[in-house]
Length: 400
Length: 204
Image (cartoon, rainbow over the protein chains, first blue to last red):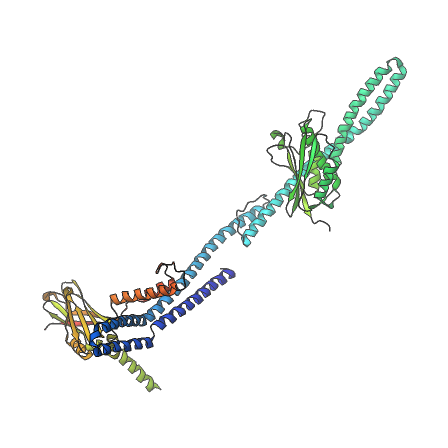
């Protein structure tokens, strides 16, 4: 039994005893007044008087007799009260003892029930801790108590949640790092031959035009066509480079609300068919972030929305949320949404639904990498219409 | 000091000494009980008997016949001092629930009758009568009717007292507080004295 419970039980008993004592005293005072010996004596004298009056005035004997009977009845009632006074006190004592017994019995029963419940809850905590020690993530303890055990259960759940999130983050980062390394090598391997090919083509065309001036226009068309293809290859190579070159963010504490408002204003005309909406946050929400990198993420998301909308007009809404630990930005468009078969691997590099040659599907992978490097995340949210992404950033105290 | 203590103990023992044993007599297939005068004849009992209430003396007998049949019976004596006429009214209800009414002008006459009365408490065949009987006597300070009347009066008084504080639309007796219940239950008949003897059944 905890000290608090013991104190409450003692307090309840003390209040009860005080109440019963006062009630008993008050009742017995009135009881005592009614059964007062002096009153009895007065009534007895009154009886004698009625009798004397009846003897002195026989004509009204019946009247005196009635009065005598009334007084006698009152006297017998008072006599009974006096005789039972001790019993009434005993009744008070019995009720008091009964109530105290009930309180103590209830307290003992509550104690044993609490002990049993506590033992079960501790067993569950023990199991959860064992699972935690074995590295399990996302453990659910199923204990919503507000006491210490309940708080420990929630701490275990939070810790396992953090472990799970960190594990997923590490896995994603490792995965993206492998892709980055591959992209870096591909870019490196392709850049030199591309540059060489560009120069060689230029020289080859010049030589051919010198030797066969009559076919100069044919050579020029061929050169333009080859250079266009090489340019195409260069752009792809640059995208590889972009993935490979996602560096560490330069973090500064900034107001996310202000950053979003600036973005909506600056990029308002960037996508002709797209309208950007910044849902205002009630107060400043700050996070440690790399402004340029976050802009890049927002641009990537808007690019995807614009491409999905095509020639139709569309809307993208940015909504700030989160709690004390994190700032979230929900980016939601009203386009066709993400195809179910793509959802699972949407952040994998080279995942795209566009036609070949229209993009390599690196934008979301790069965005995910950027946010993981911020110790945040980019997730695809569930949405009934349109695509919905959630950007999560660790919250920071806003500078004064 | 020791002497004083011994005197006190002796005095206490004398005060606490039970009255002399009653007599149980077998007569005409009845067990008659003759209670000692000391049951009535002391100052406290005299005060109780003259307070105007009906004092009830219940004497019950228990025994087992020679053939092993349990024998039980009782006689009830109700004594009330009639304050107007200044006489003792006595009602005796014994075997076969027969009631006998008597009256005595003085306490001494009542005690005298009491000392000589043999009250029929149980019926038994003379051939099968037991040799010993257990006699139990209890003195109850007031009758059931007086108890009910006092309870009604008390409850009515408490309700009236409460209604002087409560709104007038409350009906009398509509709510009963725990205090009323405690006081109401406290006003109950309980023996103020009781004795138990096992005595031989004598035959005249």
